[in-house]
Length: 430
Image (cartoon, rainbow, N blue to C red; front, side, top):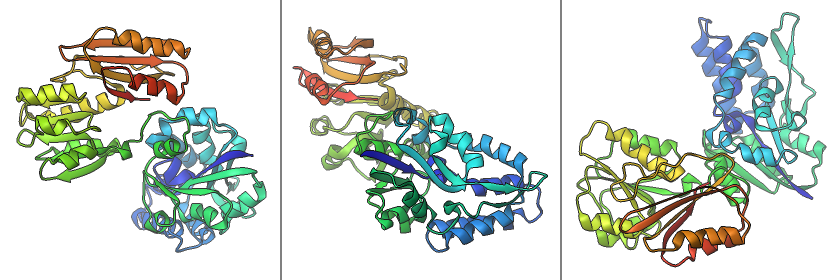
């Protein structure tokens, strides 16, 4: 009895609906292309929301396409660039679960297979429709005997497959929810990284804004240790819209407030503020989750800088109204959160470690007292964990250690690292 992961393709594995994109390629010179695009997208959305049968939607879209094999080649190149970011960065999950991952889609193998097989997904685990071509290579129809071309096709297919074990479904559309409705799968995860369909979201067992979230809650291999959507980014004051957009693209949970209150800081992992809305030193002492402050202006308050350091909170700042800070501040914050880089911080020692592939990165922030590095390494040695890279920098207040290890570990290792005396903050990056 194993576990299986049934994953949709359109607007899930990729950011787009492939047939809609194929229409834009095949009809780009058609005089009525905009009108036809609108019709095709309308048929797609009606089916995904459960307002039109999938069979009727598919038939209507195929008739409008006017596509051939050369258009499919262009589509495949386009789709490879449109893989959903959280799928793209979690290649390790697909590599470690080749038997259990199945792509089940109402789309077509001709464009799905070349895209997903680059992520270690086996051809025999790809279930989708197939086109019918004429002698000139024009798409003239599809295999109507394939259950995935019919209404309730995913349910029919799963009944035929008769998989033995717990089955989890991940998708954005009504046909994905039908698997849950049928009782064939254990849980349905509504995938909202690209689009959130209310009629699907409200029926899901769990809403997953990214594949990171799905992997996290199911304790599966993943690229990052903690999903960004679970980290609140508190925004206070006049913050450049470009900066907020960058944080949103990273997946952070943005929270706007007019002032900094202790209750807001207690929930936040990231704070973006302007020069006129900075936290007090006292507020930082109770901000246990706060990891980084990005200030659009200068932080001149010495007590605030020292309190941040004392509590393991890094600060990046930039002169007020500097034209670059809409891009500069969020990039510094993101580099710290993703890779542990502290370059240009006003209160942490400078460190720019290179990224190490096929390794786990851990950050340990502690009071600058002798012997901490030795204790960290003793924990790794006791658990037979090999260190592939290690960096230590200090200032008068803190020591900042980044360790890259190349093997798995259990929760006991993390607990022991956190328990080292004089530890301020410990974090697993990836």
